[in-house]
Image (cartoon, rainbow, N blue to C red; front, side, top):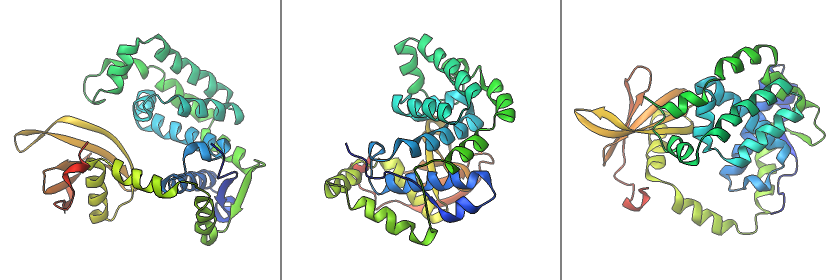
Length: 276
């Protein structure tokens, strides 16, 4: 598969911003925008993906530790490899060593134990999660002196593949990349058919709440609502951590910390074939 996005694309504004995270976020936004436009990871320069997945790793570590990183990425070998290569490229030597220590825990797990963990609900009693999180405190302490945001940002700024584009011109640049996709119509059809019902429901709730979906994190099948056990799908938006309940014709969105209802949406329009 040939590269369609050959540069690390960021906005000129992020490059000029004094905030170290701005350029990392701009690269992340560009990669997400390309993926949303059905460009595949293999068609994006690996250099952009190194920054992208190192930042993803950092965010997961800060939110729920190494176990959450592995659980949410599905122990994807490609993602793990991008993190390894990214840490090496950024000269984050101690982080790279600690990452290998964490991966060693997975190596020592049986295939059955790893599969059980990846299929688990993550929350509540979870021995696999606890085993994977033994180095979390070491990570937090290390990041105080070997700051991954600063290292990632500095690496991006000096990268020979960096291409800065004015923010108001970025969509045009991305559209030019998408035009190179040889089977775009086929990808669009497959993408529409593959969206699971819970994702459609969450998107509908985010629209009602006026929030932007970041990612779906996990499903909790043991959630209790009005005396009945239902599946609660947890997700992150630009405004925090929430969960949703699919009640058939109506969906409810709750703040995960307070448990207060945030929004509700009529989902009678969702077809039955959108189910998992």
